[in-house]
Length: 422
Image (tube, rainbow, N blue to C red; front, side, top):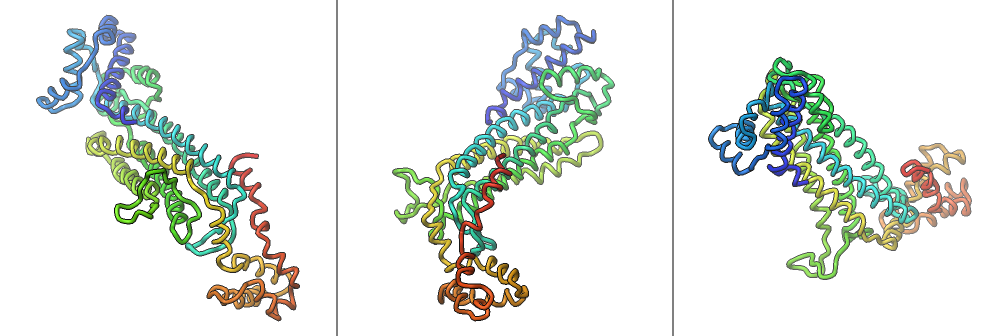
């Protein structure tokens, strides 16, 4: 990923844009075919020399063309015919973003594979589901991972769309009118670079495309943070249902030798914030003055490499966390039983209503027996059995059947089929 953003790579793409444009110009008879051939055969550049020239001319594309001419010779006068700097800069930037997207898509495939493997491993590992951080009803840990899988599968679809949206080429000249260059040149360069011609570029490629690209990276980062936050919560000492892998010889604290901290997922939370930092500037880049200005340029030189490199690292880190995640089913069972059966309260409520009790009265009866258990007084099932109003409606056997964990997990296979396919 970092190689995509190195100066050498950038200038190589610039060279290819100019050389392919020369080929198209030669076919049109605008420049000699021998000149186009000379560009490919003698064309070269040196990053240090380009930097040296730019310090004098204060223009990066001119510095590049000057250095290129030092290698090509007299035929270099035919390079950049009818083109403007944005033709080179914008087309190159989109090539870089497409290449970055391809790496990120491969990262997503690796993460999806890890999530799928662990989801099936824990498809039937029952744990407590929480809403507002409070015990709600039973789920399985496999369902948690399946939800993450589905989310990242959506992210892959989004990134594929963003990649397609960003894969455009502009070789349209000053203010984008093709006044000094034939549109067929743009078509040829686009084909050679695996891009599509930009329908209308107004000298720059419209930045709504880039805004969507970086917004997509921001959404993916947010999904990373969601999974990381879940793991961080589940690793808390009082919960300890899962834990980041802790290698032999690893140390968690400089002061407290017993510590095993969720440092990787905390790191991921921070990295997600860094990726999202690119989103608002990318949105603000959409509004340029008239046909072109360069207020977007300095922004993109930063957010292009920063967001893609950071997200690449974060996706690989999360894949490693999921792949090696330590899961503790016994602690899940302990936490599930912590509230003395209260997790079955809704099922009791529904059973009472189905037996003829109004919903308001059923809610009152269930809550009346639930609150003592909430405060650590008694067992929910036994209190319900001892409640005359409840026992007049539901027998002890019926009440006991309402406390079956299997009831809550009976549709896991259906959900898995929806997520992973039947």
